[in-house]
Image 1 (cartoon, rainbow, N blue to C red):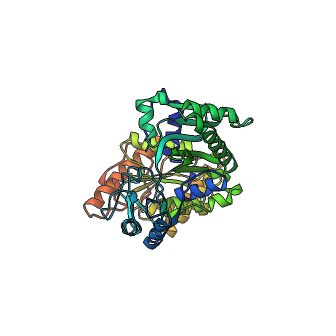
Image 2: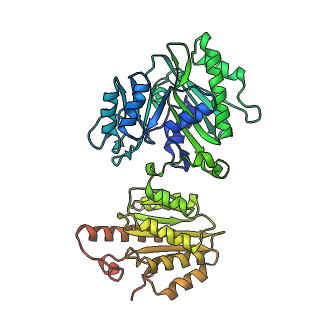
Image 3: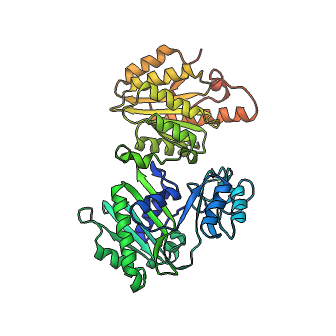
Length: 450
């Protein structure tokens, strides 16, 4: 969704990075954001959520016969997207209950494909139906956490209803940013100043500032990492409303925000990432063929980098953390091997808090339990590494070992290419004949042979 933004709009890029970086922040549907805003006294369009075409028609009728029907999928660019059944657009203006029912029939149960979802799209199970309003002006308003100032920052613009990335790239001077002290909070004076800077007319400034203050209170109270309103608008009656909203929440606040985290929709997420979360694993699926199991986010990133340096492509980011159990390691293997593209698994562990013998136990259990047919390259260093090596040797399993990171990465890349080529030619390749197909570099640690 977001690319690199103009240096003259550094805080706008902060908004972009919230969406771009794959971190575990809870994202909730728009209709739930509307409900949450209403509970905090924030004005939103009248309407309701529906999960059948008949419900969509009824809500449209209750709204006077005209409405806006919006697909509820966790992705941006819905209006310009298309469904996998060929139906165009995830946002539609309808002029009658009958038209609303027809439009809903084409949207519900189909996958909406946007620039954010990728070709696989995301299933549309619900539709938000809201009143048609005559909008006079549109503005952009967001609150997010800023690592630079170590606190909230308000980002606002007169260019609401548009792609903020495009605004930042073409007219960065139209974006303003205002750091907020966590101790003092967002004051009414500051909110009024923001409203004035982005061009709210005098008669609407007080109402706009009041909405900003309510949004800030929601942001703090619910442990949000981002509250984005695009647009915040003035209608023909002079009322200020929040028409569209995107909320993210800090996963670390799960324990104290159970009502918020109960709103999670796992049908909108990668099933493997959902499974990983259940086992307290940090997993992000990628499009390569070398499965990675690493402890520590920094080492995981370095592992992916070195794989690419030697011509390979990682299939995932998977951090087991510093306190993983053998059971979690086995679960990690199940995740990695559920990706049919994986042709080699690279285990790279630097044991500090994490003990190498626990990892070895998990690797052995996974290899035996899963009857693993995918080559495993194992590099262990650190706490109880000698015990771990003894366990691997005693297991007599075909696990490929290396002490040096470069050597291990080269092995993983070369073996992955061999297995991938064999699959493409419908040939069987086993660990016993990999050496004869393509010897590894001189000095490489031996491949256990039986």
